[in-house]
Length: 580
Image (cartoon, rainbow, N blue to C red; front, side):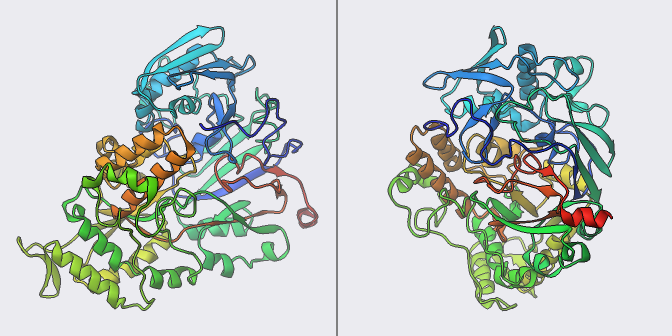
């Protein structure tokens, strides 16, 4: 996107991969929830999030050390105009699908057209900016764009490529468990049981095992996803060795519950990894489409009533810091205090659409840590009063209509940690005359309802990278707010948001890109759409001692593209001894 790639032409392998990693072994993870589809490229059905990474392959691949750089994968070479108005890819002559058939330009064109029209809505925005796609020579395909957007050339390289012939007589958008997409990736789905497990096996004839981007990666023979009804069952499966890799997001549990026999014997390794990516947003999102959360003062009141310091002490022993903005923990995050310089200049272009705090500065409330949170309660009541809500007979009531303040919190079955947080939050809300209902549904219902934006408040997690781009439209753009199955859960419709995304996409310098992102962070944070909880600046992972990864950790840390990609299996003394 800017400057030159860090790795030279003809590089041996990615700097965080082991080019000599041996093949063999398996990695099995415990997942909470269920699934009813194996097609990650459409809206229909509930699909394990890992599948798009494990079975998908694109023209180019993203490196986890360079946020805005891609390297050749299915494409042997790439050429683009100086203004990025078009991009042309030349397919690798050996590129092949898992069934041995070659990847052709026809497959590439069909994949772009089908995903852009029948695929998941996340693909539609890109396709709307494509003026034409055509075969321009042997193994060559060119996309020409209809709008200035310097990231489009890179996004074109990241679209998954599927086999056209597989779908000739099938309804692509209606598939689920009946048809497993044929791709060119290193892994193929070999076996599964709906809602129970998925077994992916390494393709020994994978076409790209020796290209630089893939060398030393995807060498485990099996990746297995085991599904459980709740977090407790999933953790027990790891403790007993039924699964051999897990991530722990609760530091209190990490410090108190990982002293089990397999960990004490050395059969299990506990590791903490740093990373340099943004915190993203994790917490409880308010649906601003609903009347109850349309007013920003009400949303701020909900944030004031959320006693984070008390909840954090109860859940983690106050060991995990709070998310302070969408891009916090990174150079792209907003700075405290008034906006200055280029950030202020960009914000001023949209001054009429800014909420209080965007220009002047904004920070989340901090309580004294006591359960009653008198300061936060008082602030919440004052904001609600200014928005027309008053306490009558112990209940918060609309002063004009007499209707009580009520809303529902939607949770997914198995999320015991979220349920515990919400229990404490409900008690805090009762102190200001609000008694919300809490509805818990299974994973299929949860997806169906969130796809339809059928909720008032729900758990929300949105990972963000150091290379924000067109996906920001999908996350908080106005057009995505009413698209079923979209990712704009909070229903943001703010010209300042769309305008700042436009700016970061058209920036020709790194400085302007950073300033535009910092400004966007301010607008999103002061939109008060989500109640942030704690961030994970440290990844806590536990795994069997016969699983290994290189010592060099990429900037993105534990992120798709690193696990299971660069891991390998090799018996250690601890595991060999336990086998005896």
